[in-house]
Amino acid sequence: MTDSRSLDSIRIAVVGAGGVGGYFGGKLASAGIDTLFIARGATLAALRKDGLRVDSIEGDFTVAPVNATDDPAGAGPVDAVLFATKAWQIPEAADRVRPLMGRDTVAVPLENGMEAPEQLARILGREHVFGGLCGIVSYIVAPGHIRHAAISPFVMFGEIDNRRTQRAERLLRAFERAGVRAEIPEDIHRSMWSKFLFITPMSAIGALTRVPIGTWRAAAQTRALAVGMLREMVSVAAARGVALDEEAVDRTMGRYEGMEAGSTSSLQRDIMEGRPSELDAQLGAVVRMGREAGVPTPLAGTLYALLVPQERNARNPVL
Image 1: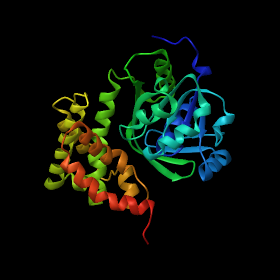
Image 2 (image 1 turned 90 degrees about the vertical axis):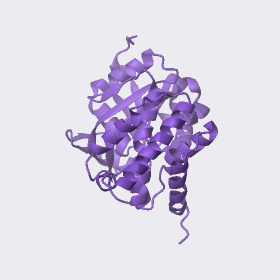
Image 3 (image 1 turned 180 degrees about the vertical axis):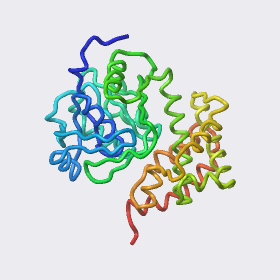
Image 4 (image 1 turned 45 degrees about the vertical axis):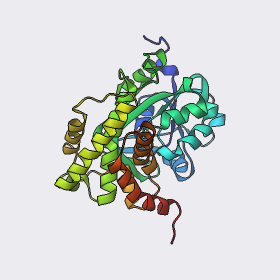
């Protein structure tokens, strides 16, 4: 199904200009796609003053001037809103961007975790929500300055009911014009679970051991912990109607083996630096979904319990 409307008329808003939003939004803008960044504070000031700079292993680029605002009400409706905030910021972000929603606008979450589509649906309406995910290792060097450090970036998205629609195809073509590897998978829920399977054990074990992946994957004890967690998550997914194949655990461990030895997750970096993290959206979600489905998750539950005090202290310091 092809949308006859030209990409010259598509408007895309990106909520958040950090490692994810800065990179993918920057690629869209640099390709001539009408891209609006929703940002605040120092980030907004930097984008307006100096534009956006991205240092990338696949080629550095800059965008200047940048179309950025902290007032979505003045921007008018767009065709798609890409959510690139931290997972816990989704409800507030969704409420802020209500003025951007037109009759057929789609909201695409690119966060880690499984709960963003439901959160967006409650605020913006299910008819507006895609499932979505991305792959990239990137981070903020300074406001308006992003470094893409690892992984060939990609995005996946699609309708919640997996229909192949014109609006999904049009967004796909926008990413393709920007040179971003993009896909509308046959089953967006299965794809999201595959990403969730990858990021959650890596985040949890990295945050607790406080070492990069090359160190903990070399230890038999932590490798076994990762395998056990992956098996728990596969069981939870199955109980929720998402059948991950029997090789999902081995495939995920293989992906860990293929990563640069110094790699860490954003959750690990946040916890180690004393910042609020996506702990609840990752480990907490595994525990909640397991409890709701009647599937035991003792390993995920134990790791979550051990990390909760650090998360609470980051949000409400005792000292």
